[in-house]
Length: 315
Image 1 (cartoon, rainbow, N blue to C red):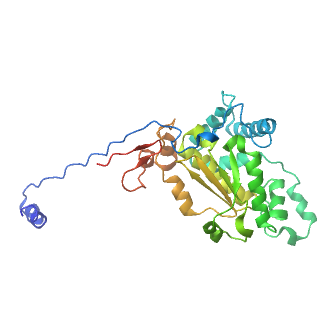
Image 2: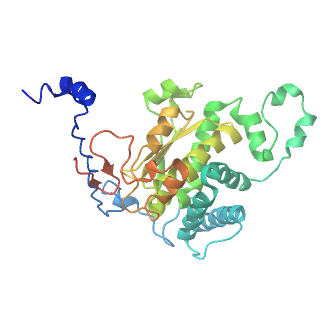
Image 3: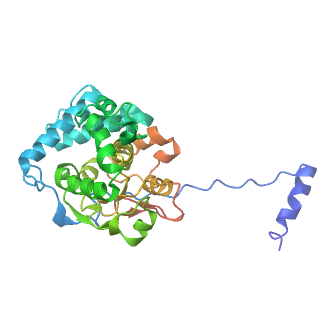
């Protein structure tokens, strides 16, 4: 009973100068770190083996694309990594995130742009009636990307989405790992800005992302891959595309025909730092502030799952 009346007696105690007990600080919940990486949900049948695995085009084209991408990434940073294998590309990406901070998405987008030729030249649009190019942005764009939007993405959005899905699944497995083509779900079609003819073949399912598995870092996944890649397709090629990584399985879905949403980005960012993260949360701390560099994710309610199979003990 005395405890029940305590709130009503506190103002009187303050007025009389009677010292009142101060609440004890609540100790932080202990964090269990289970160093299990890759996560248990990753499909073991889709592991990419360096020097053995290859995409549908074969190992020679894979090596060519990997070399071009690495050269552009090194040019953006001004140096190359010491490791000549795929891990060197991940080291470069990690350095890009660490050094460019909030500007890493723009830097990564520049890397993607530089992988494409500036031909046919954008200036060739002056030879055509103004109605052909319409309001398509020309400034600062590679010729191939500009003309793709003019000649394909704008007039044939459904075809362009499926074409980009097919090219991505065939030419980028050296970076993402094994993947396959699927159709979009009915709920995805409801969000599409244009008619996708049923959405058949408009989704790339990455079964076990090689880049995410090797980096073991949520900040690298979001800031050096998801955000700039979405911006590249949507703004440089004129093709709507949304990426949805799954940190529990290492899967990722490229949904062509759908634009990114604020809710989707928030979901991708609202994840605890992986237990195997090489930077121990430092990259996220640099990008998103002191609090979000902690092991547990403040955006999640209840027990916080650590993306290595562990769980934060409730207090």
